[in-house]
Image (cartoon, rainbow, N blue to C red):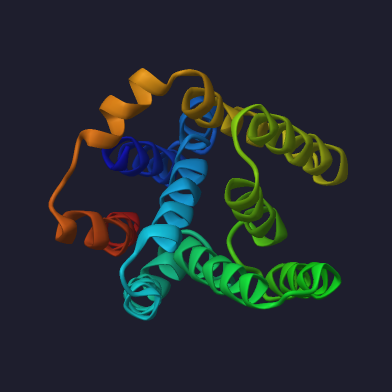
Length: 205
């Protein structure tokens, strides 16, 4: 799973920077974000210390921000910021006992993430919530509905391809189990995002 996420993210960013006229790179790249969302939700649910988990995410986000701005988006916040914010929203929602309060927290966070130009913005948060609070066939249905909504609102045609890893997770458990069991060293997993951003930023210049 981790290898799949890293490779497809690399393909996406290489295509965006160096081959922006070739859509196939971006199509392959749509696989990455749902896998990272899955990893975030699993980490959030099963970590032995959420405090340390969020600190690690925050450090990666901080290290990645300048390379991200240099390589991809000078005015945006990188995807690890999105994931970390999504995790904090999950924690805030889990702590409230009121459904209406949880909805208000999610809505306010989605608005802030769009206004402050988080990578994936409100879409990223909504996908995190879908992965956290749905499963099996409903996970596929809600992910599809989210993609259709953003296709209608913003013309995000490419994002429809992001449904592929969700389908694989739900309907290909044996294949997914093998991908999930393929582990890399923790420091490779944690350093890959900022490191590849640094390399792309250097090569771009």
